[in-house]
Length: 226
Length: 117
Image (cartoon, rainbow over all chains, first blue to last red; front, side):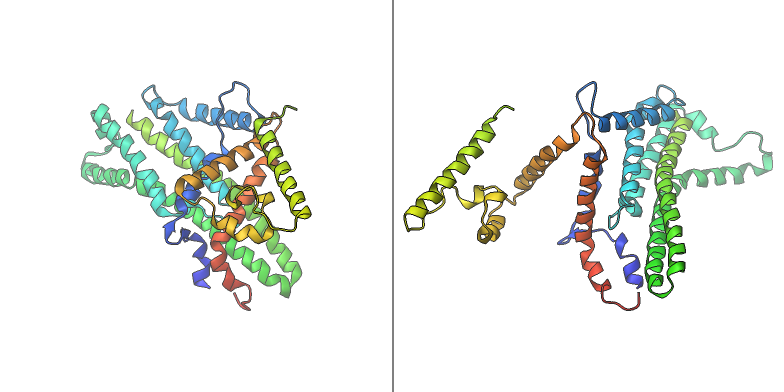
């Protein structure tokens, strides 16, 4: 039973080749582009949503930070679509793989930090020591701030992985509990089924929120460093 | 409705096939079909020829990519309408679910007859 519970998180393969690449390439098909000024309903809705999020996210940045807007908006769209597609039955969610989230988090964080150190060295180094600390505490606090800086990409990646994986696991478990109980005691199975419905609504919310949080934190690191 | 070149081409192909069938009804001999099996569209392939039709398909990377492109443009006419609805996207998602089901079929096979999970 243990083998089967986590088997849905195993990366799919076709004869040993990773098919995860195909699955990661699938979400862009759902977001079409268009050359016209006035598009059909689908494209208009998507463009409106993208404009809404991009304006919301990029207003707090300076001009230099806004050069990252394409990266951040595509990041949030990718994570949202991938998480939401993972809620379909039997589908594989690439964001449950820690490798992929690390691959997303580390370059973005490193880019923001290196940019901060290159263009605003004094400000970036000043982040290591908060204002108004008593003098004896300074060495320890510098060490603590360095560790908290270095742990940021790990936290980004692990947060996304853990949230999505935990949600999927819970849905698997409660779903199988409902199925098992449906033969034994039907009213309890119906109660658990309502729990499953609530959990699905929560998962939809989590999918959206996690994307938002990921992108927001990256933009925060960017704001600190520009 | 304008007749495109493709429509006339398929119309001539169908009329040619019908003519050959009529002739073979008159004569009592088997003649080879005018169009080779590989180039026939799916609905024109007879049932007995189906395995050979599948095997003769173009499975090179550029062939598969061409198939995806053709499928995408055939699907695009359901999406690129002024008042598109949710059904266009739902079709794609349903295909995606079936596609992922085929991947996890190997794991799910063992679950059907188990008494305890």
